[in-house]
Image (cartoon, rainbow, N blue to C red; front, side):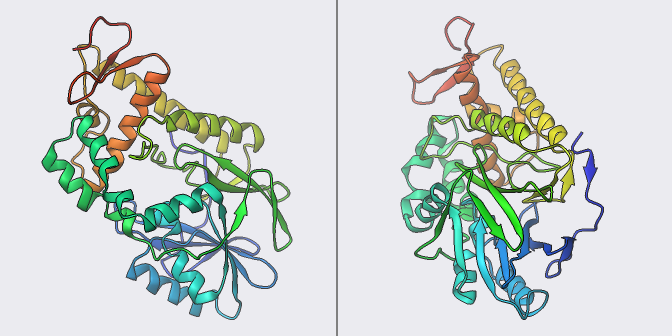
Length: 347
């Protein structure tokens, strides 16, 4: 089961918009991947427009924005841009768009600094941190070489960032037109993703934290190899469930707006616990590397781009299970492995 109530409007064509509430436009921009679009929300802020997220930094996105600025958004300035998190499909066009429009960038501090890090530090994408992570957990030298080039190309697709920004923090209220939006933050998919909740209108801009059809990627990054993003994700989802009513219209970063928020959160939590059970079963007969476990969780041929996400998500389940005491990690050899905690020596 994915979601109980799908928004009843057809998705907008690329370069077009659907008004889902008065003064709130739903726009989709193309992505060059299997997940072929990202949602952009443009809100009437009285004096002009406030844009939430910007799309990935490609020539196709630039053309799409030129069409929008000359078409459905024409005649009014883009005054502010909110970027929910640092991933290139959300922040990738912000540099270009700020230069074109003179808009102010609003963003969480952690996410802004991460976006700057990945955009400006050459070693952030291609350096030793990711390479070491992949090799230690069982990927071959040849495969890692392809992962570091083709697989990481996604991270390079940005148009830069402005030099300054306005920080958004949890609990802050931001006025967009006549609507008051409370800033909500959450981890797991990204370090401290920003979401916006308008209590009076029953609107929740969830970014990639809660998606209606797929689970957001919950992955371990090379710069923080022992992190537990899955635990952060569970904690965030529980907080959202407590704070935001079930009937709220949720505006996600991909696919379609929906209601049934609590049901979707429950489904996401159940999904990841089931994945942990699959990992445990795969380790029942002996130790496995993370590379061994990727095809257990992802039973399809993966491109190098997809493999980078699949590996990161598999490791997030392993790290979570180590933290929960279900698995233990053997670092005695050149390639690390994991096994069930309640078994005798690994392997």
